[in-house]
Structures are given as structure tokens and as C-alpha cells.
Length: 145
View 1 (tube, helix red, strand yellow):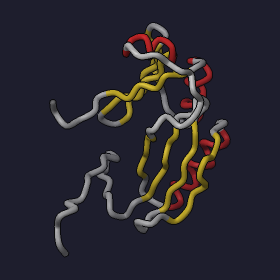
View 2 (cartoon, rainbow, N blue to C red):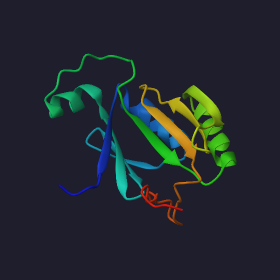
View 3 (tube, rainbow, N blue to C red):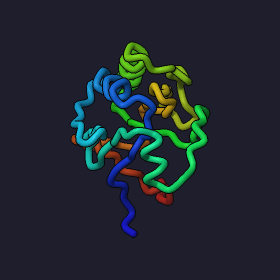
View 4 (cartoon, rainbow, N blue to C red):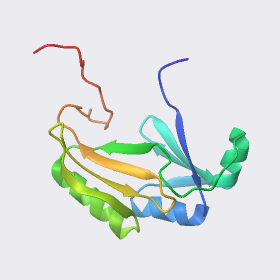
């Protein structure tokens, strides 16, 4: 298996509501057969009905609204951009779960939940450089300096 991710699919309760939320964040999606696709750099974020996603994956959906054991993250280029995106998300209806704050790794980050409880972290991390296209490159953690 290649070490990459092509799509991240979020199971949502109300597709039009979720699409509107992400579009209020500035994302532009395309809807095909009750599924919304957003190009997100080199991968795609997909919104699909939660029951349909569970059935397609062959799992029972307990319908829990609690933490699903996963977060999505977008790294940005500055502390100010963290604050701007957190404010945009809150204005779009996100629940701020962790206000932006200094982090243990010398960065700055905050978290919000979308209308279905999917948690996003918005982070500025000086140790994870971003390319001109926004692509993140992990540092060599074993390098000595």
C-alpha cells in the first residue's frame, strides 16, 4: 500500500447544511449523486450521508454525537491566520472546542467542530513548513542540529 491518502469522507446528518457550512468557510464543492466533493490540495474532502457511509463501509452506526477519535487539521502560515480562520468558522456556525492558544511545540492552534461534530484543528507550526501550494512537508525528526 502506498503511503498516501486520496479522500477523506465525512458522514453527515444533513448534506445541504454541511455543504453550506463548508462553503461559508470559502470552500467550493461539486455535488454528484447526493455526495459533495471538495478539492483539498492533493486530496479530496467528501461529504456523504452518515447512514449511507456506514452501510457502504459495512459497519453499524451507533449514531453517537461524541468524539469520533479523529481530527482533521489545516496548517497555516501565521498566528494571525489561525485567528482569522477560527473566527470565520465560528461565524459559519462552528462550535469552538478549543480557542486558539500557544502550543507545547512552539506553535499556535485552535479547534472547532463542524455541524456534525467533526473536529478541525487550525494550526501554525513553525516546525512544519508549508510549500507555496500549501503542501506540508514533515521535518526529519531524527536529524540532529
